Image 1 (cartoon, protein in one colour):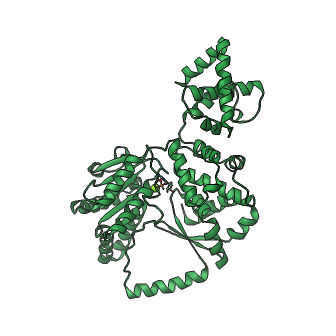
Image 2 (cartoon, protein in one colour):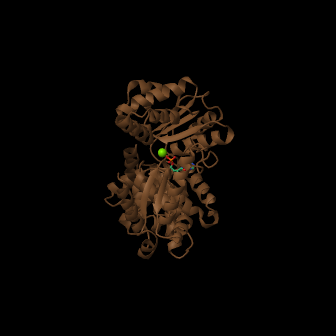
Image 3 (cartoon, helix red, strand yellow):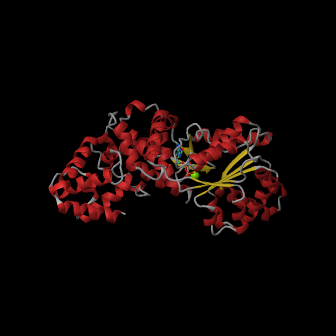
Length: 450
Ligand code: ADP
Ligand code: MG
């Protein structure tokens, strides 16, 4: 996507998220001027925009931008004047020819310390720490794969940050797109003036290092020439016991367009996958995140559980949900964060983040279909018999068949109190003793579920 289009999509989303007055004041006159590595630079009209966006909107900006691009960027806001000044300075630096600090492209935000572990990612984190402690020795290459939004990029940066703070090793993090771009650029320049210097620069960037991390290797599938160059780079680093870390949205076996010899090499070291987080992990991540933002006291337990129950499958979306709730509360002139505010703030959001079905949703869908009502009816408050009874049956099944916690069931039925769930389950249990038809119906539902 072109940079202007990216920004247009971003602004559209921002516009939907903010009161018109706020959008006009802070966003209407901004422009994205560069995307480089993981840094996004935005042109703003005045210094006050810079300060205000940084202090009040940064998290929201990052998260919405992430929805548009699928990657994490750190934002820098500059006024026209600052840009001109920077340009002058940069020219001076080039003339001095002394860029001493090596650009690792690491995001200091992503650390092992703030990577929360659960069953689904324990192995990945442990191996990542092992590699960080002994790069080039333990597992080479380390190949991390998972669906999007489950922490691959976070883990890679954490490894890099750890190595940089505990050794003098040179670490380079790039996305595979960056690698392809560098290579294409080299190829283009080379064709024009056969500039050997450029080749040297490229080689130095990618080979004169101790740790190379390539994120989202799947994008290399479409770049045949670059695969060859990556193959050479890989071999040279590997032979010299330099650590290589690769992430992908698929296992090497499923990277079908990649040359076989590359795929084989990816399996030489260790492959680890990250699975979607379970309820407990989602809850812990929410807790960590709000603790990091100093918001622990503002978030009632039922709100956390509501978010954890409804936002499944993707941690990026989970973070987005928190940001949205906070922004929504702020917009309602600093209201307390309550369950009803949360339900309202997230009412259009969850549909987008349901990527995997869990037991409760599965039950809801089946029961809704069977009784000719909608899942929304089940989650709603209407007490007419043709809705209230199926709702109680669905809750009963979630509890007795899947042993789901009362609070979680309540959350996923539109944010109801756990006592409501207990009451429903009791009611159906009692009724079952005398009502043979009901018993038959429920037995059939359970059979269909399985
Ligand atoms: P991927 O690269 O797999 O698409 P990311 O590493 O970009 O996913 O993770 C998406 C977001 O979720 C990031 O903001 C990251 O910090 C957060 N995240 C992922 N896993 C965890 C975790 N276990 N603990 C805390 N935050 C996490
Ligand atoms: Mg990533």
